[in-house]
Length: 382
Image 1 (tube, rainbow, N blue to C red):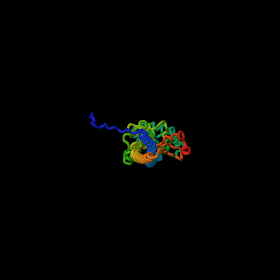
Image 2 (cartoon, rainbow, N blue to C red):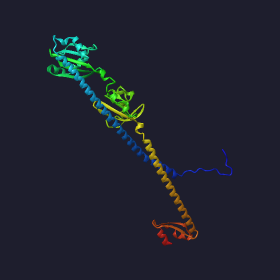
Image 3 (cartoon, rainbow, N blue to C red):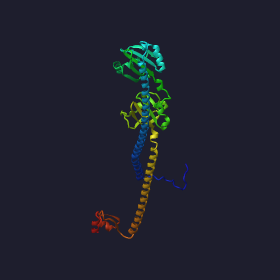
Image 4 (cartoon, rainbow, N blue to C red):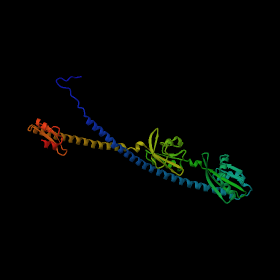
């Protein structure tokens, strides 16, 4: 370490306790000021995210409504078609007796009318004849159909007909029931429409919620309460809801309610979003946290800069005022010193407080005014 020859070692200027306390108070005040600013900016960003999510959910509701109307129209048309086919089969006058029990005739009619199968029943719902395109038993399907009270109503009122759609073992069937005209009993025609519903060329929620229709930073999900039926995220397609992070969206045991901004945490990070229910669909839309709070850092930097600017300005003004006060005190000191060199006694009197203090005092003055604190009493005594 070099030695200083002929020079004293420079000393570092240590800040006074007053300066340290002033800086600590400034930092504490800055924390107190910026904390509500942070809370306000956070709330603003959350409200903005909530508005964006509500807009996405509104679009999803519109898409679901369009899809339901499309599906209802198609289903109604398909049911009307199968109803027409079963009525044609029952009202046609056949030359031979028990023609409806001829399975070859049923087979030809089913192929000609593009039906999956036909049941012919007696008044006790016993199967007299049955044809299925794939050779299936379909006894479970039959039990589901005749378990409906509408089947019994048609036996009692032969002029009635009935058509409906039923889902069974991941298959969907359109069926129609009509009373036999030759003998008491029922004729049931059914069509398996599962392949049409799974046809990717058909309009579906998946095609209506194409990823290109949404912002790249939002994840949308539609579930039926059990399974994800539509989403713009390939990793979430057709998975069970219990395996989707939505199952963990309940925070602190709170109930999941619509119109509330929810926080969702998973392996990919933190997400904020909302959910709503439309008929039998549950609609979800979530934004990642870095998108929700994209502007918060900029706002905080701006307010911090403003605070620092104001704080530095205040400290500079305070330092300037302190310097001016010291200069004034120095000038007063020189003035008092000059006067003190002329007179034997110099007193500083504070009329408002009725106090006084000696600057220069002769021995006689000390003897006369010793112990007197009041300026008025001191002058009278003097």
